[in-house]
Image 1 (cartoon, rainbow over the protein chains, first blue to last red):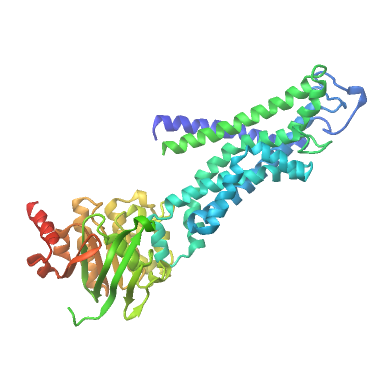
Image 2: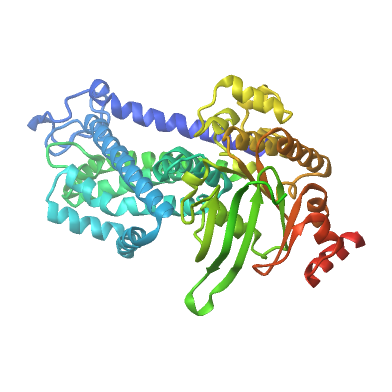
Length: 271
Length: 246
């Protein structure tokens, strides 16, 4: 292994460790949160960070640290679920279109083109507006456009390998279309599409936080980073910590996952 | 030769590609017969239609017109999932003919219900050892990989082997080994072989009969000795001249 590749591997390990820390914090939020994230206390409104309330309190006297931790759970779970569903739907549609081609391919790819013609957030706001508030509405709103990226990528990879001799050999060994798609094409393209999914985590997180910020994501009193920033901006000058800490959480998490996606992609380019 | 059974034949095969206004005729009425136990060489330069002919034979492409017949039964238009029961292919790109993510064992077993013993027997027949079965294609040499593809073809128990430029990507030593192995396979197994190559010298040494294709048309066809000694087309003469020049 070359020195450059070794260095890249170390970068992947470091990024993975940080990503795992974020995931573990999100998963154990209920256990490590120092206070009940939804417990209000009029006596503790907008308290500055202190030893007891490390990130201070918000306008309703709720512990900001506990809410940031609780928000991590919702933000990460909804992001991973959305990316995973979009990935699965996209890769399956992409492989079917790439392998079989024909009219179904034409129709699905034109739909994908249509989705890509508009900025993702504009479509998401419109769809989320129609569906109303709630995290599932926000996920559907973002997912409607997200699968197209995975589908196009999976389709192009499928097109590039579907005429390889090993696919012909599999056909001559009696394998049908579905057996070839899931037995040969999927294992050979999944890594490339998965790396792309990794780079989508940060973008999705921003999307979900953005919709929550606009009131189209999670509903009160559930903590979510975007909605916390939205709530806190009304009294930004009085209690800036209510906005600053969830914003820092978003920035750090996105940097970690984008960095992980980038280093994994770079490592694969070295192969 | 003509007393032997015809295993495979193609009649007036036509194939064209591209849009109507700019259609390219790749095959223009190609007919041939493959007899039981013989090696039929198909020779021609790049773009002459050799590979397209193989694609038609194994069902990857459908002919525009013409017939393909296996042991008296027409199978024109049938896909490779079904033609694989009676024909197998050995590819030019030996590495590319195996799934890079699969072990050799898994690739060889795919689609054919063979026991471990049968597989090891065939592996040894092609001059390989069973320890190579756990490896992936990139961990084999080009020659080993090509032998593996011959083993796979034999495990498929087809009565026709199609060899598509099988030696062109190999070094001289491996080429000789693979050619020797193909001869052995023909002598030991009950198979007929279609041997596609642009190397007339190799074909003249290996094949019983030869068919020369130029721009999708058969320009010479017959017993190898006859074609070599009395070529009827200018193109075959030129090919022979180039062999002598070397």
